[in-house]
Length: 533
Image (cartoon, rainbow, N blue to C red; front, side, top):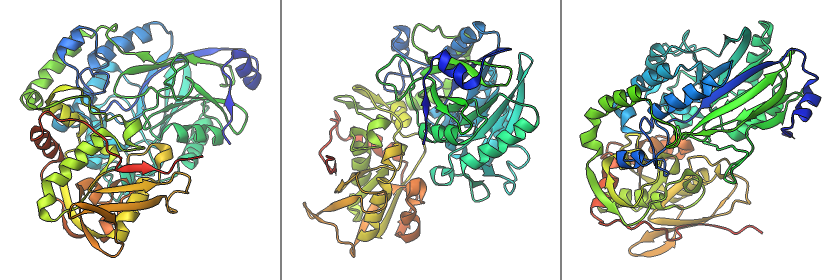
């Protein structure tokens, strides 16, 4: 059981003993940047230069360069690390892959990074190219890459850096289910993060390191579990769950840092800084001479309009944007209102963006005898604000270059797919299904994969009726999900009449919005949950 520790200095000293030779370190950190090279709006999508000039935008590499410089200047000892998922999320990644991220991260002067699941989206080779281009270590301890030529001998499990005359150990963790979330190939085998972290802590301690920081793209819940079960970890810099931690905001998922008592009674500080470069995490940690934390304080620094953009970085980004502007500035539609695509909503219930994408998919192939659309909510990466909609905004929502896939499946397998979709709601995972052509009711009180799906109805000849487990239905999804991504293995193993090479999903959605001007966002109760007592 995870034991949270209060943040008072006295409480920490009681756990760690009286400090004799204090060492202070500022841990600056980012996570889940997702190629938000330019400033973003409050909806995590693109933000116009006009709004940026008015101070209405957040983040972007140019602002982050200034923010990091200011945060470093106020500390004698600091490091800058990343919790993974720099890749994927905008047309900049689509066009430049990892090259632009490498250039910008080198300029920022990172000291280390862990591998996020999206770093594998274009296979191990693109990750390897990124690693060749960066001037800092990229780490992953909970995977065996010995059979993957692109990564073997290159990807480190842990590393030791020095700062202010002290050794600091860095360990990398990646989601254990990355093989379901991305495209690492069959040569990379992922293992349990707790056993991997335990092993690497011992390796570092054997080299005289008593200050250990884990860079973990595993999610807030897993990070707290690792902190509670692995002795010797001082700080966990997280990612993957896009968790906002704060001591001042009522929107925070927990305190910053979240202090967890380890199995040996020593404290571990767990931090994360939301996503998309909106915040720069800033944790000040003090260690005693035995390497135990005696104080840990901080707060994510918002990268808003008050943080000036670095001029040279902004100029460079403008140069890099030139080949992309014609595509992303093209106005494809208009929305009558904000289209809600927030992950905290779309990954647990029906949402407006999910309905838009699923409706567009089904509309495109309905004349082919397709009745059901299932989209993974993890493929929806932003909201769209009201007014003109550009192709750039659509690509920010749907950055993965997925294509439409059509196939046939028995009704019983459709139910099994929906069971998978609602199996990890507690962890806000991206497999939650957004649908069209069907409606379903599910019960969160039932154990995962034990019958959470209570009823499924299919639109057939203009009316709703119960799904027939023995009947074959026509489905549409994206090629990633059809291939078994996000746990939809039943699609990969049991599908019939498969065609994975339809039009790009972003074009399907843009075309659908253009045909429904102005687009009116909505929900209609197609997904409902049994009320809890």
